[in-house]
Length: 274
Ligand code: HPA
Image (cartoon, rainbow, N blue to C red; front, side, top):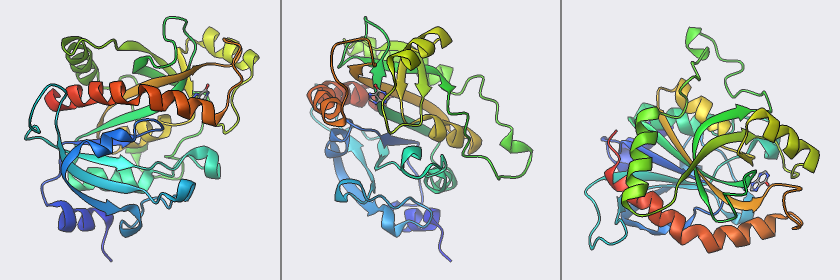
């Protein structure tokens, strides 16, 4: 039987791009910035998740990005995954396991994750961008449960690659963009948090809270991929502003902030040295 990595080699080339970007809520416009894009739907990739949300099946595309201020695309190919299976959909944290293992088998070296998050910090209002330096797996669930072998005991002490983080900060500064740094706490959702939960997260050392990313970071580290992750603040977390939290509201903020976020991401991806 053909594996997803076989299909990727056949349809997108035997040489995998070094970087795959997993798009989170609000970061969709990055896919539209790909030039000479070739796409494969997740439905053609064994082990990739089936996604029902919004009638969108999920797509893996490969192409080249043109950073802001440049006339032509960089020679660097990147893979962009539009569509993520969240743990809150099934209760299982391993929805992206097949996809991430296939990327590694194809030859991808780094996973760049993006997400939408609630901010715990007054200096990171909605629209602000945060580089994830570390995470708190508050759910205490693992996508590696059930695997065998010593390599399941993954070292998470530098889960978000320090070298890639330093490059991302320098490249953001070069591009004149503000990129905050902080700790991301993973909650299961799909409900938002209570104000008491947010006060607890603050005590625990979190700067942002969200419902994704952590399982994929664990999977990527297990598969030997380096990880870089960016959060877009779409709202102040529960109890920190007078707003009522809703998905529609966070998506509306994300749309407003997306172009600037995607500009920053393109500037970083164009020069990231893997
Ligand atoms: N909490 C959890 N996940 C989120 C939030 C939030 O406030 N905003 C966007 N994703």
